[in-house]
Image 1: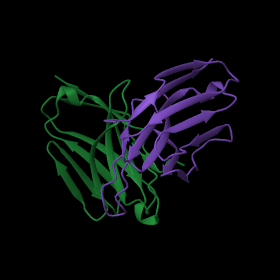
Image 2: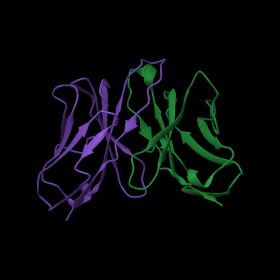
Image 3: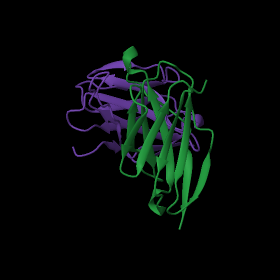
Image 4: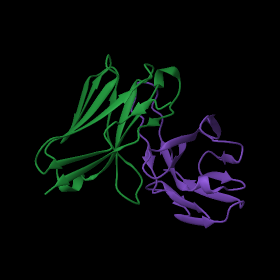
Length: 114
Length: 117
């Protein structure tokens, strides 16, 4: 049972344009979400988080949107740069249920074309 | 230390052997996580510790897998009677738990790649 889903395994975007990466979840108890970026042979690197009390969080070129009713979040990268080419994972936890266990999606490979 | 350190970075072993993977978290981080990542998949949760105790070990696939964190810092993931299906990258992460309304970001190590022949 995949509780966190990233249905697009890959995405190609032109440099300077917007990249939109999507993530869906099934567990309505999830209340805290993280996005990570991963380069080959490295561990995932934290990008941005969002709590369920918000519907948007922004940090520089990265913005995460949360739609609780649809159980959907998205990461927007504007403008996209070639160095953004990596695999992106979303992760979710149900903190107010007393757990800090994070469930990760399967990832989306982003390729930014110069 | 400055980051999460995992050793060994690569381990090749034969089916049936015993393996230990070590994780040295960021100093002061109370929570420590183990994940396993297979090719083309996302990190799969195995276990996390709060201090010395396992807060949730529901992801350990079977009783061949065991993890300890005896002093609340370094952790060791132990795999007995390894099987070819255990081949994966084992990721460790640490975090400072800030409560249900604070930030709680996992900082990952580079991983230990395990290959079981």
